[in-house]
Image 1 (cartoon, rainbow over the protein chains, first blue to last red):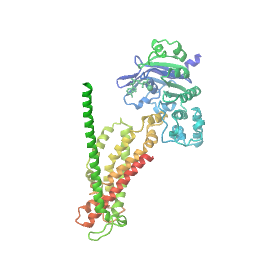
Image 2: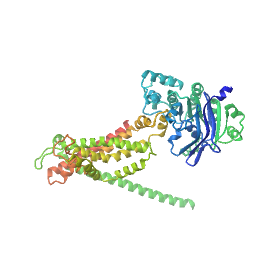
Image 3: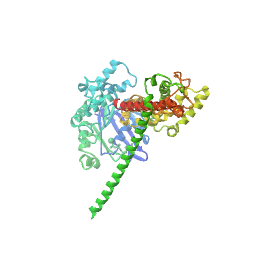
Image 4: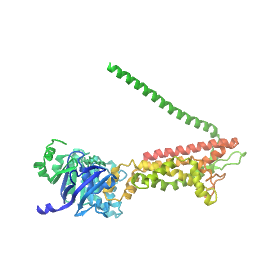
Length: 260
Length: 282
Ligand SMILES: Nc1ncnc2c1ncn2[C@@H]1O[C@H](COP(=O)(O)OP(=O)(O)O)[C@@H](O)[C@H]1O
Ligand SMILES: [Mg+2]
């Protein structure tokens, strides 16, 4: 138990993200949040509280938003990913991301979608690609549904299948950490169930951070939960504690459904 | 009382709307009517000169009947095609830079340049090619004409490329980058292929636009009465020939000028249709 608690995979230190003069996350002091290895950490809170902003700071996606400024540190195995000289491309290879809207690459087949991260950095070995694609699709619980039509356009898949495809695509490059921003927000209950089941098996391979504004989902899938409100990280702890004995009144108000 | 007032206001609004709709319909009708008249007149005047010889034979001297405008048709395809090849890398690169690297320090200048060039009279592109190509090479040539048309096409391509790329959802870029792909790879392998239909459409429309230009070719490609396949020599094109024939005093040539107009119209319509087809097909 003690060993587990110190096995921090990623960690934010005094993290503040600003959009221009406005603070997206880190109101009232920067966010300090540990993400434990091979655990699922859920980020919860009402819309606009800074969950996505925090998540995108973990793999330097804010680099693409001209007005976004990141202050503080994000440590990946103890190394600051914002230190000068760190290549954001390499950070993103280690810290993958799945977005709210399922976005299969529309011009590619199912196979090429999954292989994209490998093929496009020059891996051509067919055996290796085949293996990686199968492993990733199995990992995303999609293999059985698509194994007979790998060469068909990915746009032919349903929303839930496309979302699992994007998970497979992220897994194929073998990241250590997988960031998921409301991955089931646009899915039907059955697809949602499939992805929740998936998370439990995935955490054997990767550390997972999942944003959700569905508290039941957070309670079902996560080991740790962080509650955000108005750009502030209010409370962090084991999911059970947060949902049964929260320390902060605002957390309690939120989980009992009094706002948000 | 209140409802009556509202009623009146509403009725006035309906009347205004009907009036505006009428104006729009009238304008559309007028535009089509003019196009139709031009086409009908060109057909009446030129269709007699449109036979197989028109496509297979070069022009004849005045007074001799028969002949065709093969040299101008082939010349148009070569000069415009070469121009497109010259413009393509620059136009695409500028469009990509504007759409994909909005913060790049050269972009304000690039945009200014592109907007200026877009509004520049076509003949000035001819002047530019005259100074840059004709003078140093010591003579008129199809190649210099290609450069003139190329200059003309660059800003058109840049603008259409930028427009089409900005329609690609940002989720595609983010998904690519989140896979740990470098930015240039995301653009090349994900963004451009996603936009390919629009890109092809833009290229075809630039080609069609340049195909109809005579002014930039007056002192570059210059024109030639005989088929010329060597782009280092003066070459003929349909708009050039149309212009030369139209201002000539000969009846035969007038008819052929109309026919040249018809063929040009056909070529441009065909290219535009192809562009529409491409935007659906890909
Ligand atoms: N690109 C952006 N530009 C400006 N403000 C933004 C941007 N993205 C998010 N914000 C602001 O930052 C705050 C946090 O947003 P976000 O992280 O998206 O919240 P959540 O994901 O919890 O709904 C909000 O006030 C939002 O308006
Ligand atoms: Mg969000």
